[in-house]
Length: 288
Image 1: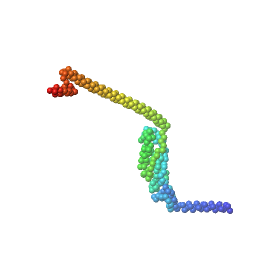
Image 2: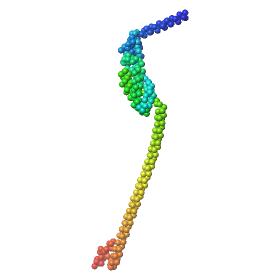
Image 3: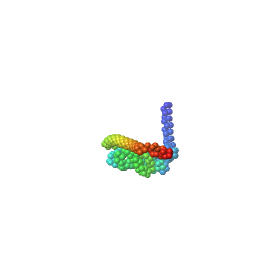
Image 4: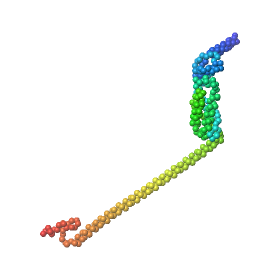
């Protein structure tokens, strides 16, 4: 009894598989982000099936083509302008235009990455690297990526492939060149350090010279001020002495005048005398 049940279950499963397979030959479901290329008896049909449910003939085979943004990565070696070997890892972000999937499949197939994208990516990368020296490759990675992108955009648009971004993920030089770069960087750092120290010493020397100049100017101004003050003091003293002598001379003159007046006085008193001892009115005349 148990064996009969098992046999019945196996028969049911096989029947379900056969029915599903048979029915599945009459429709197809295209997932989002893909298109379907219909192959009838080995020939790609012009109609491209978009995402969703589609009826089809049992003699039609559907090939799915991915139309989402995808990333393709390649490893290669290239040479710089100064003949330095470089190992490069580069990636490309691309998309297949869905409406052109039939043409791509018919002319190239599903492995268009290796047949179309890879050789053109490597050729664009190598031709661009050859324009730069090894040191320039290190400092101009972003610029080089844009140049490669421009080349690929023109070349792959013919195949209805859209390129959005090129990323140079790694650049590796030979050990000898790497050692030379490191030695040069060390020498550059030492040179910069020496130049910095020299600049600091120059700044210090210029500062000291400026301070000395300011001090000298201050001393000169001080001496000038002192000289002017001394000259003014001498002038003031000279003016005072001249004034004193003038007063002395004036007093001497007045005294001489008074002395002469006394010597010439006849004994008569003037009625009125001024400060200069000169008679203005004679008292005797008034009495007469």
